[in-house]
Amino acid sequence: MKRSYPCIEANLNKIKHNTSTILEICQRLGIDVVGVTKVFCAQKPIVNSMIEGGLKVIGDSRLSNLKRVNEAKCEKLLLRIPMESDASSVVKYADISLNSEVETVKKLSKAAKRANKIHKIILMIDLGDLREGVLEYDVLDAAKEINKLPNIELVGVGTNLTCYGGVLPDEENLSKLITIKEKIERVLEIKLPIISGGNSSSLYMVMDNTMPKGINQLRLGESIVLGRETAYGKEVPNAHKDCFVLKGEIIEIKNKPSVPTGKIGLDAFGEVPKFEDRGVIKRAIIALGRQDIKVDGITPLDNGIRVLGASSDHLILDVTESKYDYRVGDVVDFYMDYGCLLQAMTSPYVSKYYVG
Ligand SMILES: *Cc1c(COP(=O)(O)O)cnc(C)c1O
Image (tube, rainbow, N blue to C red; front, side, top):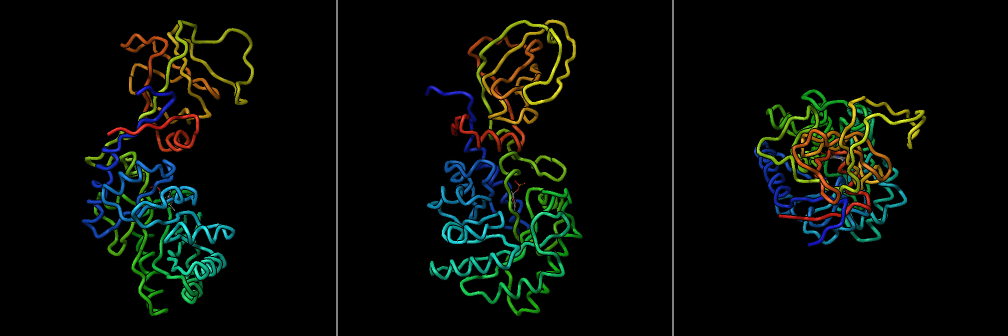
């Protein structure tokens, strides 16, 4: 099949394998996994591989993504605290949502009533990272109010760490989440089946067996697609690191000096560029730029290549040290970090292909 470049190649078998591998190590500790799909915009083939890998719930931060996989045979969880103005779509496209504002949950209650549905709520608790969540001393009041609302079922508590403040999940803060859950159950005389203990930065506690007993759900995106936990960047044993490969085509290749000629002003992004003089080098230009990728998030598979920089549409490489004699028209492969994958999957200029 003729391909158009730049493109991403996603290996569905590898994603399925990572899903089942991570699901297995979590389930051994009684933890269920919500497969987080936002980094790849909930593209259907990938969502389906996750479901084939054993996931029963997928989570996304955007309703438009959940809408895309409305037909998928799994429960859908909305990760980002809903906008009030979206209440009826939230109830339509998500079975569960994470919430921290009672006023918004009231709107969801009304919308759920209109739609004749029960909408499930996980109450988010801020354990110090200062992104979403009610503070500890407001938890009981919030839970009480939510618990009274018609067509709303409070099913659990959750937290999100390492996202804004960089606060790492540990036995102390996650144990606090369990204590809070028990207190709500005692005071309101209800059962909360879910304690959602965070994202891929909580996975290390599964890997080194320090997860407090009681945490029974993790919401995992990056660890499934890139094969590593995100608190310390450790690889998940037996998981693939290369589910996604970015490919770009060479449009110019020439021997040129490594330092520009002339007075140096600002570059296209308002910065003063710096150059290291390595004499004349073999430079390749790829038709790929900042409109498609995060330049500092790419790693060439060919370790003889150095990334020199990029403007909106051009990526410049030093291929002098490569064993391969690159020509115009050749395709160069890269791995991506999370931020780059997010941007490339989101860019309409990057084609997506699925293999495996
Ligand atoms: C994105 C997100 C996740 C998943 O994060 P990863 O680091 O990709 O595992 C989990 N929970 C919430 C609320 C999120 O927004």
